[in-house]
Image 1 (tube, one colour):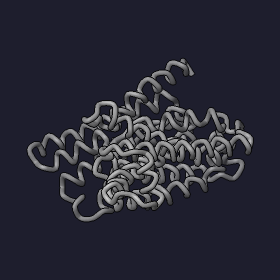
Image 2 (spheres, helix red, strand yellow):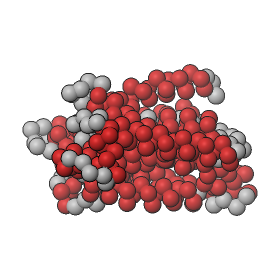
Image 3 (spheres, one colour):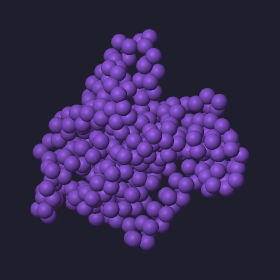
Image 4 (spheres, helix red, strand yellow):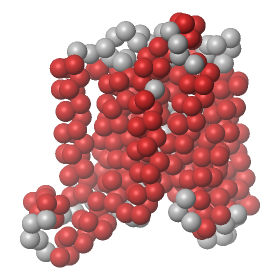
Length: 339
């Protein structure tokens, strides 16, 4: 990745405005074509406070909209985390799912449910997921880094190994709890779903994603310099190890909160930053806000597809993103060749 490739300010503003418009449009459509389909005009009236049938207002405000907001926050958090990890590792294949962070967070969440800790408060489940994500990201970092560099093959193998380890742990917990009422909750985390979203759930996730994303943005210059190489970044005054640890901690925090809220949803952090880097360049001062908006819009659209493709049945959201993401990942591997 070449940190010197940056879009002109005017082009960057146009792309960000287009992404914001896409997010608004996708949110409106997802709110209208949710579990209870509603006319777009009625949805618009309910959202703008104009007179509308009380039942429609209740459906929009209490049922449909919390799910849309949750999807936007999860997508924004995963895409931001992917953009940061790709900058830290200087590798376009880095992703919270591919390098084990999501699996670690999922294991923490499932373990919290199994031992009854998740019922102790709204903050408990994200904290357990965070602990699992930190452990997974630390292990991958120790395994993948060689003399300050992260070869593609080493990164992928380390991520696969750690994901398999934590995935096996989650499966073991599920096996030991067969027959318990908590199994359905565990499966929801492992396959990804936004069903049953509540405003208080959105508030908890926002408390992690928004401050975490804002703090990531403070490291935009460091990410630009890290993308050129650790030696050059250090020569320009970047505290390399400290910045890397802080950024890995932030991505673990945001990813853990997203997994705790929606379950394991793969490939968002891989696809969105990679595609947007082609539109806005590798300057993280633009790439990070673009990833936030693009990730939010992408997951809202994916959730809409999950609800309408096989209606009245609903496909797990993680399945939809995997169907889109796996071919994209294979394309990147083939395109990369021997690099």
